[in-house]
Amino acid sequence: MIKVTMWFFIFFYSSFILRKSETASNEITVKEVTAGHLAELPCLSIDKHHRFMLWQLGNNDVISPGNPLNEKKYNYEVLTGTLQIRGVSTAESGFYKCFSRGLLNESQFKINSIELIVKNDWEHLWENDYETNLLRGMTAVMVLVVAIAVVLLIITIKRKRSQRFLDLEDSRDNSPARYTPNNTPGVSSSAGNVGVDNDAVDIDFPKVFKQMQKDQAMP
Image 1: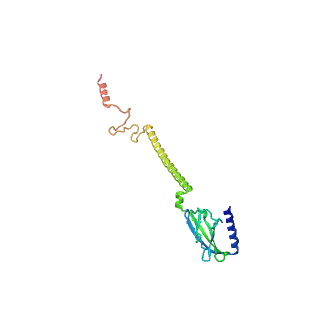
Image 2: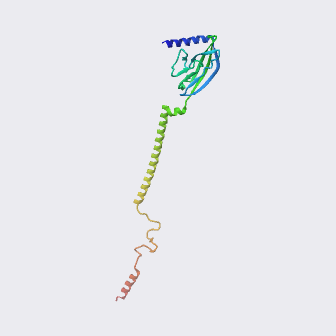
């Protein structure tokens, strides 16, 4: 409860004072850090006339000597005002303001803004991110399924072609014998027996001639 009260006091006090007297730098420093690494934001509002007072985070949280915030995550150096953010994530990208108070006149403040840009480490993300690994696994499974489907399709097509060839061979074996062009009816196809294959004209002339001689010799 005490910390909450102190936080509100610092916030409203700084807001009230800053409205009266503040010096804001128009220059915005850009700091790029890879996700998961340590981000160090320098407090550039500190000079020989101003000393560090507090950090205002991108979500308007305040970190100051009297108001620590998640010490495992955030840390700062009192003398330099450097803010350290451990294991920074993309959600912590944004603008951070460093407030410094005047040494001679405490009603004077100096403000400097830093834009923190957190980039993803794609190699780390590729190896450790759950959604990325899940997508990679699903892609590998889909590629494997498509490859198996293509192989099965090729095997099926080859089997159908082989079956058609076997059916064609069986139909040729079971079909009746066909005449060859040289096996025309009535003509002998053998080279050694050239003649007419007709029973009506196939007569044994010597036998008939002898029979005729016998008939004439008889009285």
